[in-house]
Image (cartoon, rainbow, N blue to C red; front, side, top):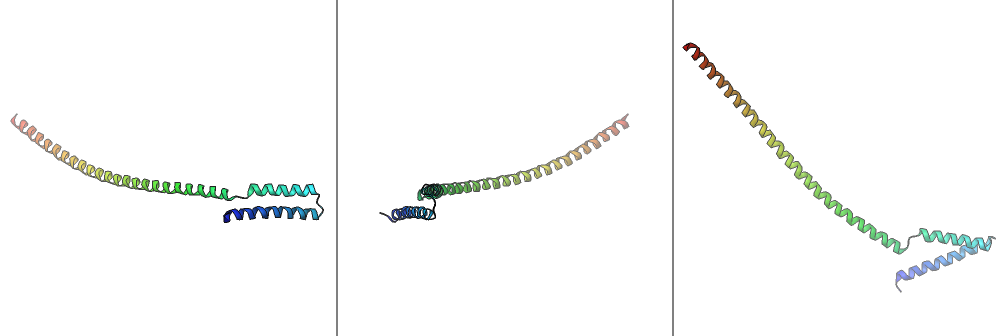
Length: 135
């Protein structure tokens, strides 16, 4: 017999003793026997349904361990997600930098095109004036 078994036995014995002492107390104050027994039975039913047994507590402990293990897994998943978000932010920064370079290239091309167009107009005007002088 283990200490757990002996403590359960003591609990049962204490429950039986308290049940009979309650019954005796009710009878001693002139409560009819059947009503005293009904009170004791009702109280015993309530106690059985509301008091947790060791098995109930062990089951609860197992459920908590499982829930905490799930939380640890969720935390590791959350860490992975944070790393992925950091990579996306890094990629976004690279894209912004490349877009800035493209804008600068476009401005340079715009300036180059303006200079070429101006040069072409000057050459055309020169040819036009040369053609007018020849006529």
